[in-house]
Length: 259
Image 1: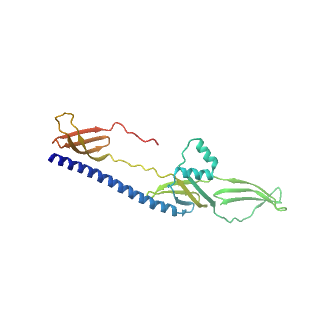
Image 2: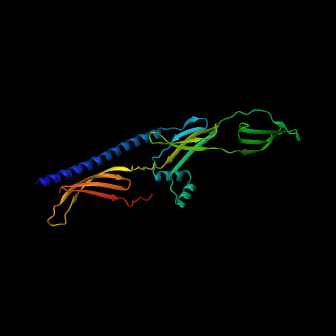
């Protein structure tokens, strides 16, 4: 009778320990879900922010499903959607950005053409003569106002920087020349990958039931605990048969999920 009571107490202890561990993880998951709900509200209310001349920031909306991203791309750029589908690629992110340029007032004098005084040679640079992105080089006829010239475009340096905020949100920054204006940024992506990094050291706790193959043997309940260091596990077990044991296990193979 005493043995049965002892068995029952050990089983209850093991169940309570496992239950408390499960409940703790359940509460952590609920807390994470609440944080994500708050993050979603923050992302939905976020607007494109000018941080400096030529520098703009916007939070990334990573609360989209793969189906939603594909539908969005299909409605905006069907040719690209078909190409991605044909090449069996996975759509991860869509960035829609509308940019413009600062208005600049230009004034000055042209040059009278030495070969034909009816022509006024003009060379217009945007935004400035020393830092020109767009250049118009041509002439205007003073008699009939006819003009002719060539447009030349320089290089437009753009930099996109992705960061993570203290709340775990992604923020994208678009950086360009000072005269670049960003009217809007909209970035939709798949959810962030959830990678739980497991530490090298952890505590192991559990129990079990031991069935004796000896007809005269006594069955027992065991409870054990130990440490895991990387792939090594050291466990000490105690049974209701007043036995104590020492075990060593080594993790020889991991079954990884296919991405």
